[in-house]
Length: 453
Image 1 (cartoon, one colour):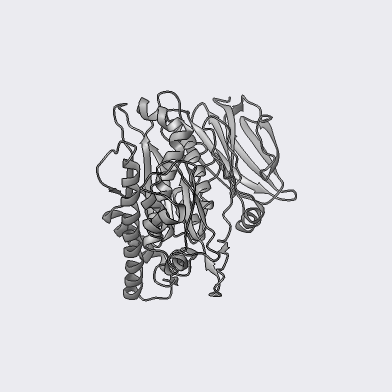
Image 2 (cartoon, one colour):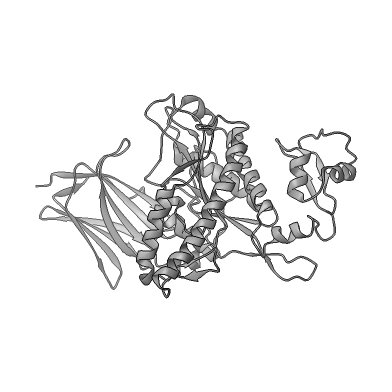
């Protein structure tokens, strides 16, 4: 006799996998296997009965064409008819604050299919309403080459920023007292940050997730590395059991986290073809232990140095309008900060469990302000230390001049003449003269002409 009810099912669609989550009344015994001609995934759940329907699932953009079920000798059989090949896996999840027992089925899409999908996709770049449904499209395409300057020096590339909106899908992250979900807030901030980055010449943003689905911690780092990112920015909203906790924070990888990650890489280098950057994009698999250790240490040292520097700038920027949880950049062993060759920071934009900060984080104005503070920190850091062969590095060597000398800048909230001058590689006096400005007063929306350096 069946003693477990399958009460509901949800679907989460990501570019590289489809996740089906079955809400069950108690833990179950199950097995999962593939059948061919035609391709099917079969899930047998012992001593269970179905108490829901599948009609509500939006699977048009998934590899699943239909779902059917049958019942025999106390076993519930669920069959997923497929449109394309997948690699299925399954696992149980224990109850949490939002859901009870769950059986999770992941249908992983082969990498070649993902690449084809990514190449033809168009990213969503507009800010989202945190109460609205989110799109599941994502682009993780190879980095585009920036338009070469008119001085004949060849192709220059964009500086690539990987933006990681935390949580997603079945994982809502922290939830505020009024029901605001961390995953929605941070995706809205991430999309606004992407809009700002893509609007700035010499920069390109890559979204780690651009919809309401979950990406594993290791895959978040992997996607940033595959995109050849120059910086990885993970965006979160803190949570705590007491509603009095408040304040934003910026985090970098701890010494302990760096040591453990270095050990993991050295232990697995013989089975890995991964390349590390910072020392010429080299593979560790053919190096002896001493050389591999030296190369990896060089890469991680450079990456951690960059992480700390950009983190301090962004911490200062956010502190100009938001309460900070601690006066300085903090360190922790977060998995998403462990890329050995990509400077990586994690930003907690505030405590969503604090009623006042939850109210702020829900508003598009505050989300835009947070994104702008992050963007300004990114620009300031990379103007100081632009990577070789980037358009920003070339522009800096040219004194900030651009062919034609017809650049303009529309003044945004928080802009000052000195900030605009630094970012564009010109002096404040030259900026004043080009725009016939006496003093330091400028107004939001004003269009300034940027003189040649």
